Length: 222
Image (cartoon, rainbow, N blue to C red; front, side, top):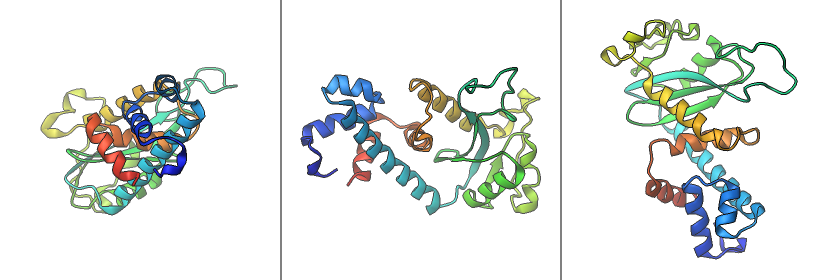
C-alpha cells in the first residue's frame, strides 16, 4: 500500500487488522470512522493480493502425501424465479466448486462448470502429484484414477459411514473446510459479487491465527 491513498499508516494498520479480524466492510467503517467506499476499496485490494498469492502457490508445486478431494455447491437456497422442489448436492442449480486438501498443508479450490469426470480429473492431474495418496468419495467422476496414474487411490463410500476414518480413509479435512467456508460466507448473506476472491480468501484464512494472517497479508501488499 503506497502513501498516496489518503490514509495514515496508523489507520491503514487498523484497517488491515479489522480485515484480519473478519469484520464486514460495514462493521469496519463504523468502528474506524471511515466511509464504506474507502473500506471496500481496501478490502478489494486485500482480497486481490490474497487471491494472487493463492493462485501462485497452487501453480508452484503439486500436492503430495495424502490428498483429500471433494466438490461442494454454493449459492442461494432458492434462485430468484425458480419454483418447485429443488435438488440438493449434485444436480443442484448452485455453483459447483472443486476442492483439494493436502493433509497437514494446503487447500485449493476451483470454480468449475460441472462435476463431470473429464472436468474434475483434468484438475486432479494439474494439482496432485502422481505419487500422492488420493482420497475421494464414491462420486463416479473419480472412477478410473488408477488408470491415469494414481496407484495410491483410497475410496470411501458415504453409504457406509463406519468406513470414513478406517486407516485414514476419510475426507474429514476438506469437508471441514467446506463447513468453515459456508459459515463464513453466510455472514455476508452469501456472495454474489467477486465470489472467487472470497473463496481464495477462505483458502488463505483456514486454520491460521490472526497474527499469522496479519503478517502474511503485509508481505502480499509490499
